[in-house]
Every structure is written in C-alpha cells, then in structure tokens.
Image 1 (cartoon, rainbow, N blue to C red):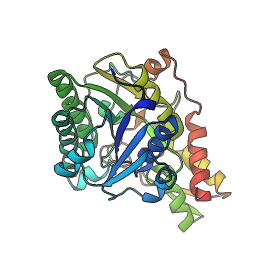
Image 2: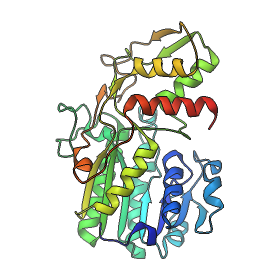
Image 3: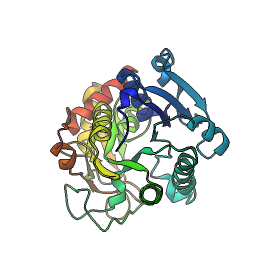
Length: 323
C-alpha cells in the first residue's frame, strides 16, 4: 500500500466501537496516528473507547456507513480507511437472507464509493476465513481456489473483496484485505468462548455444544490480529494485497470447552452435543475444519505470539474476570 506511515496518517476506523475496532483504534493512537472513529453503535460499545476518548488525536462520529452524507463529512482529509463495520454473526444468514448483503456488501460499496468521491486512496478491509468454504487444502493459503462460501456471511465478504478490488484497479486505489481466523480476546462479545462462559454461568453442571464437538478451527488473539494488521499495511507491495491472519494451529470445540471449564474452576461438567446439521456442523454455514496458512505474512517477518489454546485461555480469563 503506497501511503504515509500510519504514525503520520489521519485514519478513519469504521466499526471503531466494536471488539476488534476498539483494539485497533487504541493501537493506532499509540502509534501516533490521528484517528476518527465511526460507528452506529448498533452492536458497538462506547465503553471500549474509554481510553481513546482521553486522547486529543481521537474523534468520534456516530453514524451508519450507509448514511452517505455523514460518512462523506467524516471522510474528508483522511489518508487511510480501516473498514471493519459489518454484521459478523454467521448464523443470521439462515433466518434473514438480506442482512449480510445490506450490512456487508452494500455498506462496503458505499464506503469505497465515498472514498472515491472524497479522494481517499487507501482501504484496509477485514474479511474472513469463511470465503474459502470447505477448503480441501489445510492449512489453506491465500491462493486457494475456487473460493466457494457455504454461508451468506462468507459470500458477502467475498463479494466485498471483489468490489474493493474492482474499485482499486479502476480508480487507482490501494487495498489490504485480511482474511481472519476466529479472533478472540478481551472485549469479545460473541463466539464460542463467549457463549460457553455465559452458558456455564447459567448452569455450571451442563454445557450444550452445537454440532458433534469435532469442529476444528484456528483461534487468534486480538493482540496478534492488530499486530498483523499494522505489519501488513506497512509492508504491502501489491495494489490489492490479501493476507490470511490466524495462528499456526487449530483445536476442536471440545478443547475450547475444556479450557473454559478449567478457567472457571468447574469440575465434572456434562457436555451435551446437539449433533448439529449436515454431518456435524453447529449450524447451516458452519465450516467444520478451518485452519489458514499464515506463511505469506510470516515470510515478510510477522509472527504470532499465541497459539489457539493460549488465545482461547486468555479470552476466557478476560471474560470471567470482566476485563
């Protein structure tokens, strides 16, 4: 990405009050960037931006990325947009087929169109491992194809990637796209670790696990995620650069349950499996095995600090302690 150093930039973070967005905002401010947070607060939490709000280089706009006039005003003078605003709930697609199209595809198209009109040349986009669908190559590299998503969420993110690529090549813009594994850590408010903690708080003797418990996935700590995002942006070479982001291993759902029960100090918890759908999936669109190759990022010098087990344990500890 051909841009100024982030420490010298004015950046806009959509979804700034969310789990990953708030951590990114904190890190960008620590680097010395001037950061404008943008969030409609439908799922974001202003408490996550408590420290950021104390910084004179931070400003916040409450607005929806589909609100073109408000977004246009917020975009003026910006060097780089980190576009994180999206609906991340994969399971919603089964009950509402339009929600991911509107909140992911239409939202992304509006963001990059406003960028074009205001002269902002650089976008960083958070995509997902689900664009690969049920990959036959594990770990899965960025070059894997064809990409055949099995969820509407994955389809919406792949469509957004294509939209961004088309804009960049048509209007001389630049993009870094990250395909995330499961990101976990403090401030997380959804996902299997979060769900397990809440279920066990209600009933410490019994844990209902969606699927057959054999789903295997990679988990990456949010601190590693933010490190990788910053590193990738500052080392990208192509007009549209795509990086997988995850850990070097993967674990099954039963191990996640074991970690959570251990952190909570619970003994003899009875696991009850729903059996799932389509041969063990937790829900329609649930990928049974996900492990991304992160060799591309590692080849240019980035390394994760935590593996999947460590990431889940740190997350469970932060949720249980209320941090």
